[in-house]
Length: 362
Image (tube, rainbow, N blue to C red; front, top):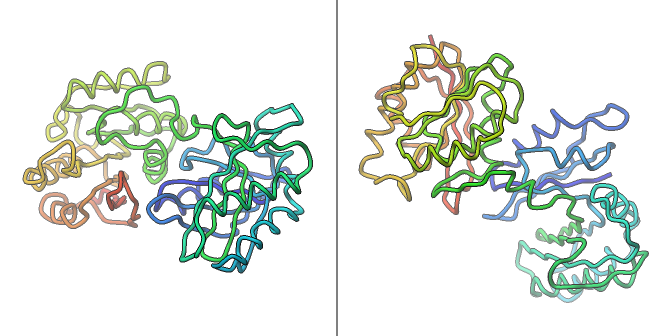
């Protein structure tokens, strides 16, 4: 069956890597990538064939939503003909019934009658509006799909997402609810990371069971929560200079099991021994909400120098920054032992940002 994962802009490849690693079909075969699409500035979509059931998709952490594909359309015209093509693709879909059964399986929904709403999105230069796409899809569902279907505006049993990317239509049934996107985090602070982004950063550290893991500027603790969820570890250390952040961190980590230590500290003077940390993931301030831009160059230099001190040779450091050039300048000045690796461009709260991978050299 064809499924789709939705995540933050720039995280599509990392979401697919997690899906490959964690999903196995009923026959033991891994999922197969069909393609990636983007809704610019909004989401990345990962389309893949998966022979297993839908529930494992809901445990993926680098994605924010999971869908099963009920219908596809190709070579959709940009004018009124396109709306007729969309209606026909959804009406005549030979996978819609199977997709609905999988949605029922994932959601536990029993009644035969289903209320639904359509969320339509368009990418391209179509001459029709998003609402026209939504109306075409809704009419096709009511007219052509088996069962009783009632279109509503809110509180629907099922969300049908119709995404038209240039000339290609994806009509998908949402399997996930808000908990996949929001997780269980209770307290949010300015500049707090979305859990999917934090999970992606943690994944890039290559988690191992004997990790001593650090987030030196942990804010509300999202990265720490995601590292705990990624698997076994030896120790997790996190801290922040803000007392409010420390309280949020403690609340968000309440009930998370393991050797987890949180403190109020200055990331430029960590109370940790030399070469005592295996893995680091950190969201450096962008200068938009939590720091003045004029102070960022010195802050970046001092934090990177401290990471070089506490991370063991061969250790992994993953950094999110809103200014890659500033980060590179700081690394060249104060932390040349951090050897640069791959970079990943993402969008964070509407701002372009970069996830940078480093390895601590000898």
